[in-house]
Length: 385
Image (cartoon, rainbow, N blue to C red; front, side):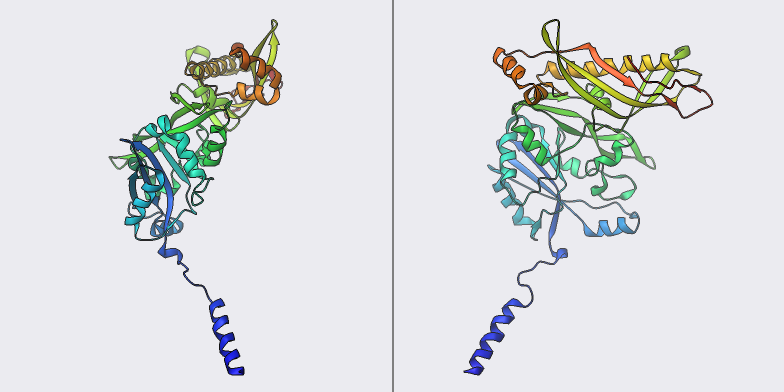
């Protein structure tokens, strides 16, 4: 009897020791990019995979060879069917723990974004922390675009947008979680960054290098695609939104020469107030600024006024551009809904909302600083313009 009990204990404990059906990390396919489009009444899904050899090379120093990009694709009448089609050719179990970029094609944004977000929200393999973008380009062309100095794609700007925000801020990236949340809020205007391709800026020797780049945003409101606005059409918003770190404003200064001013960490606040017995919108904007380029002595007050006038014009034009297609990039309606709900209910019932006037954009500029301090004449008190 004792022998039988001993044999049973040994057999039982042997099932607890060690791990069964464990996949070593090198024997899994790590997805780092997901792309979905809707073409010819079918979902087209792409997965971009992490190449461990490229990552190892980048940790030790940049690779002497171009980094390889591994992509698979599948199509189907549903997103899950397209995923299943892909799995048939991948050969390895797909791991989504490193998924960081999610790209949506323009056709999908126009026609199937709501259904797609619902499918991704109920798929527990997909990380909701991944950054989301839209594009008019082919998804595979974005995923196979290059990164300078032979670094792997995981070091591209769309993977790490915060790095370049410190040098040249653009439309803020949003996560899949934020996109799902905003899509279901009727008062929110979604600005989904648009990714394009640029083969004119960077060269390797004399050969052009194709890189991904930000180019405006898709505007979505009340679960409806409104249109796309270019970076130029949104430059006022880009320069003053609360997630901007650095941007540049240029204008004609003294002696009709270009003056370049660096805008740093702007802070913007919305206002809803009564003006002439009617509701009105307003913006209060605070900025810090450095004089980056000027060939003459700076008269501070003149430069401040010129800077404020230029910014006010650009901010107002961004508002008008979004309003023209049914958007609200400064989120005035959402602000009313949350903080002036009785006013929002009245406006919603009447079907009309207040508008922003150019004169209600107030800009406060901290004392200007100059890189060339020998030529700067700077006042010490901020002023509203």
